[in-house]
Image 1 (tube, each protein chain N blue to C red):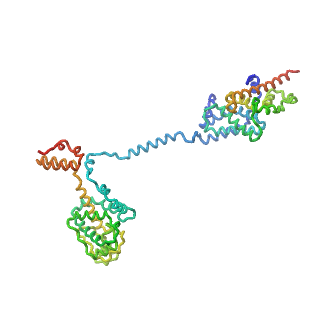
Image 2: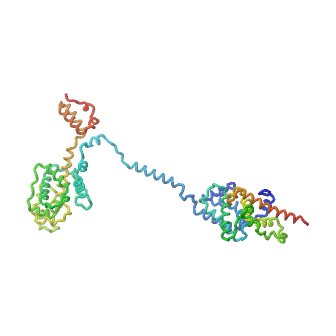
Image 3: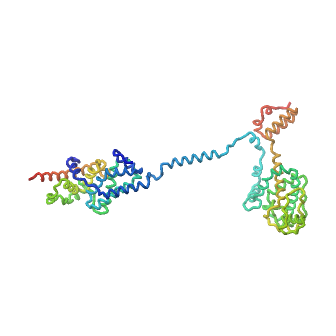
Length: 331
Length: 197
């Protein structure tokens, strides 16, 4: 006996012809169509085009970023401009930690000085070109007013409140001016001493200037409508009288007059100019100078310049020099 | 697009999973009779047969997204049917699929009552071969009946039946041998009785 039998199988097939009811067929077929009508679904739930779309998006973004990025070329001029001497930032990093922390405090939000240097330095180059001769006069005036402020500052003032950058700037300005600024009379000190306002706000109070302007125009002080617009700073502008009585009325955060800002900008411009002067001469200019000296028959001076060049550019000097100057030796 | 008649069951199922409703129609036309008879011969309640049949096809429709042609489609379909039948038995209680060759269930198999269709007084009424055969199949122990139906309705091989039912191939072979022996005996009895004057 096997597990299959032809007679049984044939008899079973002949006898067994039962089919599901037509209604059941229709219901199942309709359900199948309904399910497909909702849209074909793939195993995993993610459409097949997703990886392709993701790859294309990444490629487009990458190409876009590459095309938008400006190409940086290192030209000989740029390499020549590199200063071998320590820059202002490097000098700042070499400051003592206490001074640095004071400076960072000043840059903290809410500080009156936080944005002042940037504002002053921005127009500095333009001012330097336009009115180079006026800068020393303004610096003298500025130094004078600073001197007053310093003398007015009480001795009990905290050292942390005294701004190091202000002191540094003042010292530079004083070094630049051969004549030391005269200290103001003590009567002005009382007005300034009421606020130990930092450098940009240490200018004479606005009321004081307004009073001058009003006095010049013949109008009574204290009427805002009749106040003339503050004139731009110039050499003819007189220094504010030190004995102005209403100096303490101005808030410490009040904006400085325009002429004061101009003066500060010019001071900063002078600082920048001095820093620029301290930089080594550009390479091509220096090379031209040395060649000119050789051509003019001044080998000693040319050798001096060459030595200065080597001192300025140190190990890069040979690479920057042309071959004739590199091997130049005065007879 | 109508599904080609020569397509395999697996291709039709994959086509349906991809959204081809005609593929399902072709697949359903091929297998609806076998599945329906599989249920019809194993549960005698007509309402339950329709319900089980519909459940199996609905399960297939829902599972189309996860279907992979890793096995024969018929095996997949009848596994759904087998599982649904087991659930039905469990829900209605007290039915255990045992085999006559299982020693542990020998007592149960021996104590199974014979079908009422096999009683002598009923034989005279059921002269038709088909009806007798159906009655003989219905009288088989459940495990033998299922193996017989899977072989004759689903066209599954011994290995496929063994895999589907979770039994060994030899066990399935034994079940089928027992089933055939009983059915053949019933058929020969019918032949003998019909040949007598």
